Length: 288
Image (cartoon, rainbow, N blue to C red; front, side, top):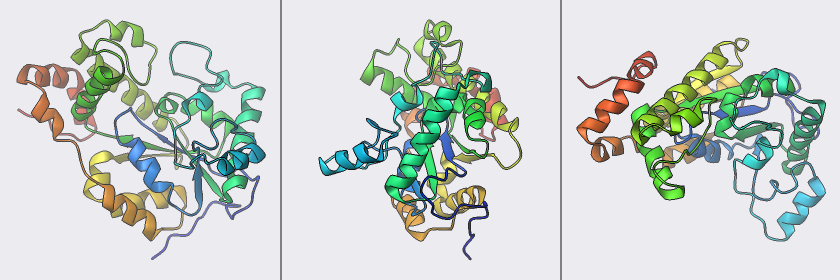
């Protein structure tokens, strides 16, 4: 049975920002997969390669489309970092300026008009450290936190460090302590990063009004795609969409096995020593 949108005023209406959805989580937790899949939903639009250069201009975005720019979903980090004034990613409600408020509301207005949809969805992992900031700008915002086994995330973070910087250098969301954590041995550094970022998101989410925040596990997304999307649709007040569910089901290939193959016993012990308490809080099993 279809669950129809229950948020008042959510019918398609260009220029009416209602209930924006922010997909948040620790980098390498499955947020990219989730954004690309749910962007298929006919009521949703998101930032794309054709909108990131002129995010508040419908005219320029249409011109970019004519010039061959793609509308593939993207996180648009430069947009979300536009008003960041310090060297970490945490932003609070008190950091909101009227200029920022006007810019982001205009950006969402432009996307809704450009794509003729009723709801906007954003994915940018550091936004998990900015939920009070975003809630101040969009009082009816909803947040979906994608959580993944911290050991799998650590393995992926180490790979990203090796690929993009060096294994000793920071990669991904920056809690206030990131410079101190960067000085630690790489395995300890990424483990502490996962704990600090995920715990901050969970605590910030629990402080939001009821119904504004929900959690979906990567393991559920890959193991039960249909059930996971039903919970997402219901939480966000979206019509259940078969095409979206079929898209996730075709891409739901868990990569959680890699950390067991790559990490040595000593490295697993290091990661579990740091991540273990939070892993258990979140319902993950720690090997004996």
